[in-house]
Length: 98
Image 1 (cartoon, helix red, strand yellow):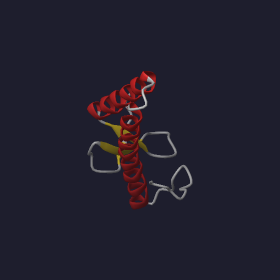
Image 2 (image 1 turned 90 degrees about the horizontal axis):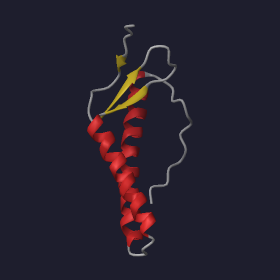
Image 3 (image 1 turned 30 degrees about the horizontal axis):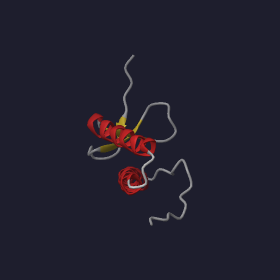
């Protein structure tokens, strides 16, 4: 089975693609980037399990870094959709970036 997808953005760490038979585009994550995200989450789980108060600062930093990476991917997705004239599959809320 051969189907064609449409690349909607320049391929960087994240690329926005339109898959056949899907209403909205998706985001493709490079394998090394995906692995880095998973490893970051594994480190955060270990910090939680350690139950050491001094690890809470490291955990907060890790969560913030992960949030920034995923927010960058979402922002790239939203900008690409806007450029292509595609409505988002969700409503944008006011974001609090404390």
